[in-house]
Length: 360
Image 1 (cartoon, rainbow, N blue to C red):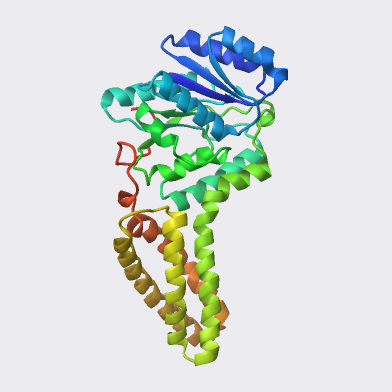
Image 2 (cartoon, helix red, strand yellow):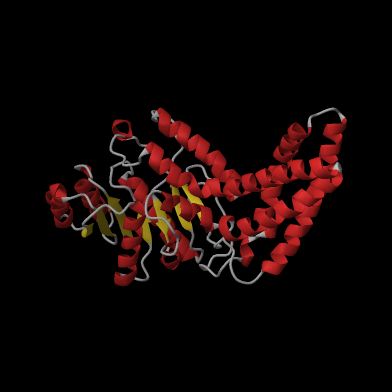
């Protein structure tokens, strides 16, 4: 079992964390990846090595995702059968909680059911306001987009069984978005996941965090924005064509059908290639399922549009109301049926995705 700690300009707590981990569990090995902290931290990393950790150092900052992937690659070379627990260097993951994740990995291995283990905080007590709000918003968006609930989408305390390391190395992202990509892609890759409750710890109002609220929030949210962006593109195209066709033909039904056929074709291609990232075979089956869904949504669209405009609602307002009503249904069906995970590229051994609090 390895504990992997990416570190950028870490504080003085890091050597103590390493020492406590190695003292508490002699079967653990600790790898620290210095993510370009610079010469000013040479002495601190020397202490980290003296207390028993292995240290890999980047000459320049490459990002947390790059540091994690470098650590995974090193561990895979040294000990390909080793499970890995990732933890942060800022002291906000207690030794007891790191060990709890390690035990969960061992329990899963003994039961023959390896899974991604997530150490999840409950965000009660003295939590900085930006962290409380940010996690509440990200939980809601994540559940909508990913299709499964997770109580802490930003946790850095995770356990990866050895069988998942090759897959984790293929997930894109070099900075904070990498950890979010792991979560977003897990279900489609057939990766099982479960939660383990851990204590919520924020030292000095999270002052040691290198998470940049604006820049890194945009990076983290980018995969989520793609889901909504595809729908927005189709909506804009569909609305523009509807107005054009309606003005030139005078037929509402024809205009709705023609606009939807064009926007649906564009939406299918964008969703398949960009949003759900499906490649290779299965396109014909996906297109057929998408066509059935589009026909059902089109029928619903016509019913709503004719009803609203018949009640005197302006055309543009009726269009907006209709699309808002149908958007969530469309996304859910596309995620679960049209581009279902079973037709994704081959991935790790687990084919079921489960989330449950507590230890097994």
